[in-house]
Structures are given as C-alpha cells and as structure tokens.
Length: 116
Length: 111
Image (cartoon, rainbow over all chains, first blue to last red; front, side, top):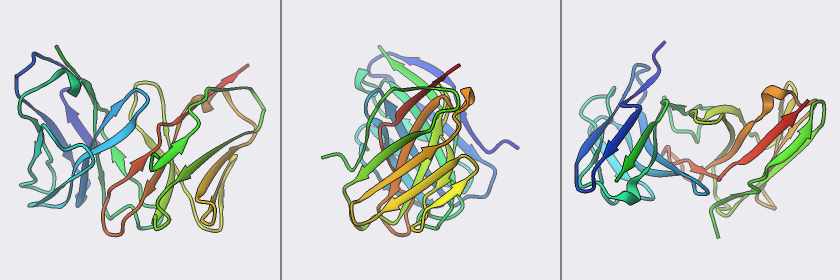
C-alpha cells in the first residue's frame, strides 16, 4: 500500500530557485495538508485543501503556492527559495476532518530541503 | 503563548518504568486531540486519539482535562522500542484538517 508518497526525499536549492514538492495519495482522501518541521518549532501548517479545487492558507503560507486539480495530488511550489525555507516538509491526508473522532492523518515520509 | 505546549524533555527512563507526559492547549474550543509518535528522521504516525472520558490502548493511557485545557499520555512498562518523540496534536476547528502540533516530548528508554 503506497499511502502518501512525497518526492523528492532530499533536495538542495540555490537562493532564488523555484521548485515543486510533489505529494500523491492513493486512499481517495479529500483532506490534504502541507507542513514544515523545524527544530524547536514543531510542525506548522503551510497550506491545506478540503477537496479538489479548494485550498486555503495555514499558519506560514508566505513563499509557497498550492493547487489541487485532482483528489490524488497536492503539489507545493516554492516560488523563489530562501534560506529560511530550509526545513523538512511533510504532506498529510485524511479521509474526513480530524475533528471526527479517531480520524488519522497519514503522513508522507518527508522532503528534506536545504536552500543555500 | 503557543497554542500547544509540551515539555521537550528528554525523559530518560529505564525499561519497565512508567512515564507520563502532559500537554496544554490554549484554545478552549478545540475539537479533537491526539498523540502522535515520531521516530528520528521519520514521519509522524498516530499513536492514539484522546477521548473526553479517557482511553487506554495496551500500555498507553490518554486523558483529557477540558477544564484545565491539558491532555496527558501515560506509558506503563516502558520498552526500548518506545524511544521516540511524542507529539501532542490538537484540531481547534470544525470541518477542517488544521492540526496544531506541539514541539514534542522526547523519550529515551534505556536498558
């Protein structure tokens, strides 16, 4: 079972470059999210989507764009990479909102991004 | 004040010990509560949801105190394999998937 698949697993970018982090899930989940994890900060929500064609901003959206053209895919675009975007990025999905008791958010294995 | 606060630890305990972690949250209207486990350089995985009445799953017990706005995780008979970071997670809103994560509490179980 693939679950949530993120690519690439590692990436080094130069300041100013752009790139897209890919996220795909094969569980037919409506809810998808992107988080970044930094030391001492915990995971912080960047953008999320409650279904195809619907996206919204999370806590730290600046410098990132998302789109949700299909249920399966939720790519995260870095427009002009900055050293402050060096982080570990996780994509997550769930079938229903996690306000529904015992709903699990499934995470991809993460993308470790370094911006130099 | 952070929305979800945890003691970062580390908690170093011997095998067989009982250890407890607490987590406080600031939004009194928060809807759902979870403990996730994250191994080093891996993705978070759900350990257990936290029910209002408290719940148990084997050696793990989770409790919610809405009046004081904290949740707790108790691990009995600690195993070496329990060594990980435990993330307190809260969803403060209805009909969204906007999880708020604590910074995590690191547990190290030694022989």
